[in-house]
Amino acid sequence: MYIAFCVESYLFPSFPKSVVLGRSLLKILRPIILIALILPFNILDLKREIIITGDGSSTIHIPEWNEQYHSKHGALQEAKHVFINTGLIPYINDTKNTEISILEIGFGTGLNALVTWEEASAQNIAIKYTGVEAYPVAKEEVEKLNFVEVLKDPKAESFFKDIHTSQWEEEMEIIAGFKLIKQKKFFQDIEDHEIYDLIYFDAFGARVQPELWSVEIFKKMYNALKANGVLVTYAAKGSVRRAMLEVGFGVERLPGPPGKREMLRATKKIEL
Ligand SMILES: C[S@@+](CC[C@H](N)C(=O)[O-])C[C@H]1O[C@@H](n2cnc3c(N)ncnc32)[C@H](O)[C@@H]1O
Image 1 (tube, protein in one colour):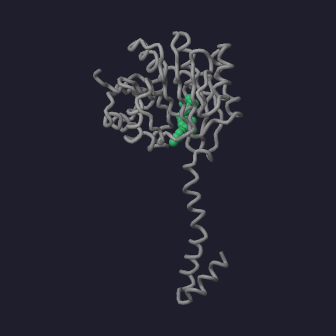
Image 2 (spheres, rainbow, N blue to C red):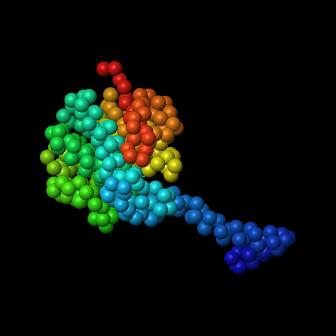
Image 3 (cartoon, rainbow, N blue to C red):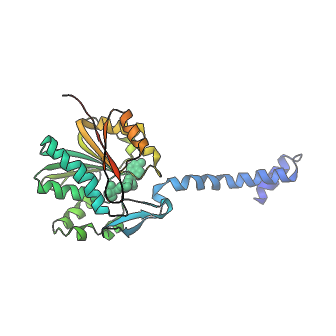
């Protein structure tokens, strides 16, 4: 800083010393201020810790954002309520489809894929599951998650291990009837056209990532769904509902998981 101050004083001798000192200080601090502004928005730099939620299942907590990958009231019960009981099961019952393609926004811990496979295999439904994720969970974190112990399903252990060790960008048959493709990319870059029956919209909350709950993103989701496809999310905010309505979804407010009054289910209603 002293050097910057001397250079400024030499170049602008008529400036009062305090102005020169202020400008030099600003020059030094500018990159630091810029880095400080950018850092909190890079998810990879945020600290992540494993915590136990209300139903005994684990999740990942981000202290800086005071945000979790799942509800603190129960990760497993939230996943089952929002995505299985309000998404997958009604979709199967309404359509009688025996092959369902699902897009998950974002793949994260793999809990939603796990509970989807459990339900689909019990009902003999074939699943093609696409998990989009820009910041994959690390191997050491996966090893600390207790979903398999909590589910008490002996077959779940190898399934859970395999979904995390499967190659990115490659479609893999994890087990008969369950194909998975993990895509490492930003939700903002999704350009799929009418290929999914069901979308599990499980982004971080609008409080921390408002840009993911926008008209622009829901337009992408609408385009990615087949006619009469369904999107489910734990969110119930008025602004989220309005963004969904704006892109053409029919939207229902439904009872939320424990700890949350409501959640949303959006349908791409098309007369066939
Ligand atoms: C609430 S967590 C959901 C996790 C997941 N569904 C699960 O059950 O573990 C949101 C996920 O979205 C990912 N994510 C956040 N912003 C993203 C973006 N712009 N593009 C792609 N993935 C993103 C995060 O890394 C995180 O895994």
